[in-house]
Length: 118
Image (cartoon, rainbow, N blue to C red; front, side, top):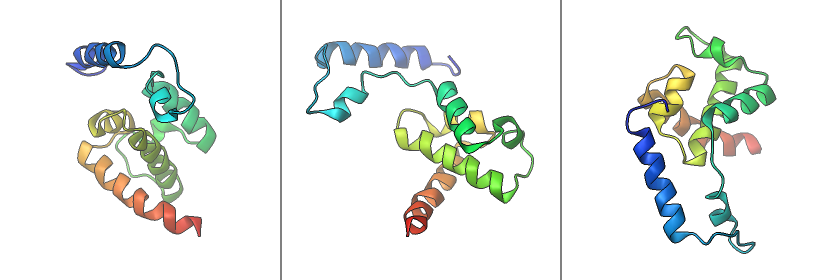
């Protein structure tokens, strides 16, 4: 795992799943079904960056990022943030941002996405 305490957190989550979730999926509760899936941030980063045609290493090196790459990075960041499965610190660690910057970029995207739908 990437950070101290992550293993204990994973054990806790697995314990809660085992104690309170039925062993089978329920077609009437799709949100509950999502709890059965384990999320791997690296897999999500890989597939998201491939879809967006974004080189994650180039945007996470701490240097200034161009507008186009920044928007792609922020969309990827927002997708990870929106899952609710990763901390801002964890997302930032993969994208070269502080946890505070992740929070700010997520807020910006939260406002920007509905405006761009129209």
